[in-house]
Image 1 (tube, helix red, strand yellow):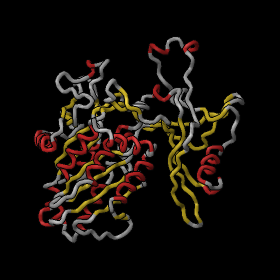
Image 2 (cartoon, helix red, strand yellow):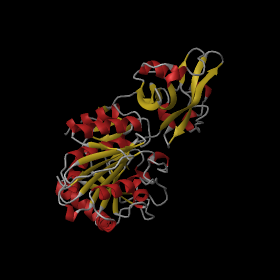
Image 3 (cartoon, helix red, strand yellow):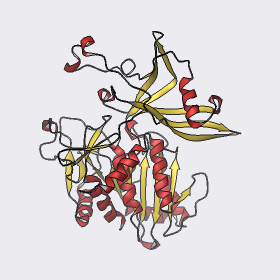
Length: 425
């Protein structure tokens, strides 16, 4: 069973407690492979055969590889996302309780399974805006120690807890920072100390709780991986790895990782922004091609939207569709939805199956039960801005949006191999 790629994946995830860290890690991977950074505020000069990347908000990134055969270009695009459900720290976060504790005021980011965040070591990570002379600079911070915990209410005080109880995010989900009273600004001081700064140097913070648990391999044959943030860092990693190991000839290969998918993508760095369309347009301009040529390239382009998929749950197989039932280690999941929450149609599904078969990797299909609403993802949002044929895929997992999710050991490797076929290995 393939393990090297899993070690790379888990190292990547452990270094990426927030979307900001995930993009920083992806930038390092691309830099090591010789990619040149582009700035949205500067003029671009794109050369066939060269490699580039551009970021937006330091939480979304698009990487570009232009083949050398200019006359036959089309865009081969993938999309995944960098964010995961978590708890975000509010401004003025410190709350004193009974003059004995300090808890932190948080709010939910995305649709997490709240119960999975109780009684486990947590800490803080994110970005900090620092004044350096006349400039405001961004610094990443990850407090790498067990700092916080959200304690459960004892069963003696809530006898019906196992019968199902609504969780109130403003009451139940506030993490304990201290067994003493801390003044407002304690978190800022803690972060400043972590970065070797003064409190007054910090002008803004975007901080999140993150689960301190390291990845584990489990199962009688060690066939499963348990890890935070598999949705969607598993796909983001697999796509980036395949992208860096592929060399296009007649394509312009694009690997996009967007932020804010878990909250609807409606931000300047989300899939529902102009980011992808802007980059494709500017690549065309940088290659000295006109708008008519751009439209011709777009007409022959293809998008693979990769966001993890629900595997059949062993204790609740009745929640799965009767005939479209993916399993862990069963291969890439091709996702279908009649109302186009997933963009897959007969044509795009056929293309994806062909890539898988050429790579000699298995594939599966997924559809929601017709009486259970599913979530949306990146495909239909992205293609509303860039009109290309698209397929939605994912890697099968259990416990999606839990603080610890489960995936199969083999599926990351399957994705890398299939995407190499797509991008022209």
